Image 1 (spheres, one colour):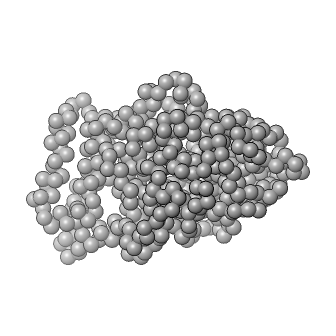
Image 2 (tube, rainbow, N blue to C red):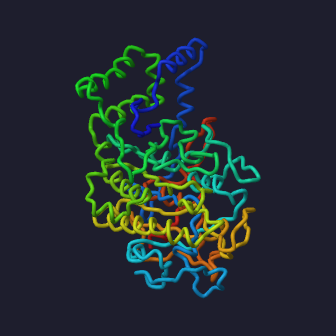
Image 3 (cartoon, one colour):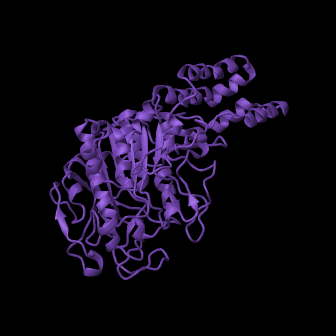
Length: 482
């Protein structure tokens, strides 16, 4: 895992002195290190179908905007103005550029770019232990249901045996070949209560495919120390160091086979390339953007994260996951979407003034630069919010104007890489409580992402026990392309 936090440290998790000792100990015990590492690597794509069809392989990059916390679909982009007062809420509807599609009055900027996106108003799944944030995160980001869910819905902390985040899978199976991060997650890991980062890492694929976390706020000055060579280390010396690993390998043939199996050469080479090329360092340089452009995205953590996501895919990053910066079950008055105690004030004053300009400008900016044709953008939460206000649907208490968790029907925005522009896919009922046409399960959206980057969802991975697992047990939603 590669973390950028402004502190000096290792570039990537490779072999340390302790690990070298452990390698030697394994050999003394008669263990086959190559086989151990090969199984741990969970090597990819055996029996992978060819794929194909509309949009297959058209996305060079993916920007996944994960609106963790469960934003209210009724109060953002699927309002029901004719519903009873305790359902329709307090916001007025506005027309968008897509005929028949209305938004909340607090999404005016995005309403003007819906001719470039598809709104899916029928995302739906039946919760089986997934009515709480972390369990729903796990399914949304890995495509699988977690094994252990407590009555409260909390999961165990991240484990090496977890299913991998979709970005980790894509980083492994679709390497960039560039001196650039394949998978970046920012501005903080996903979190509910004390469970941090569940479904956010590479799981059984191994830590080499973990995302590169940016533990900083892009709305502040970024400290790029880990991507900047030290003043007392000339580039010539770094270049000499970059050959050291190869030299050691050649002199240690027994270790070489294990190294090749685990692709450690690639990881070290990538680390040195990142330093020597400066490409990644420049991608994170938001100061290179005009003040006007930064203002358009919004001077918020989420807005500047979206701008940074554009810069990253422009530089060759394959997968960028932007998490809504507040924790999933946080206080809505400090930016969390979990609006049990208060729904309308936080949405009006905090959430939507940040969400609206960031989404709208990202779509416009990608399109104007010619990047939208090759970048898939998905904005979605782990679930929506209950149609009837003040009721409990997940065991939580709710204020009279609060909305509880609701996975039975909610909304996603998808765009780019051949996705039809200016369209509404699916339809919710008169209360936005369930789909009445073309329901879409969250894992079908993951299958669509795999399809878009040129991977069949049926491609087989092997976990740490050598068991075969398809990327996701769902089919892509090909009707999004027509």
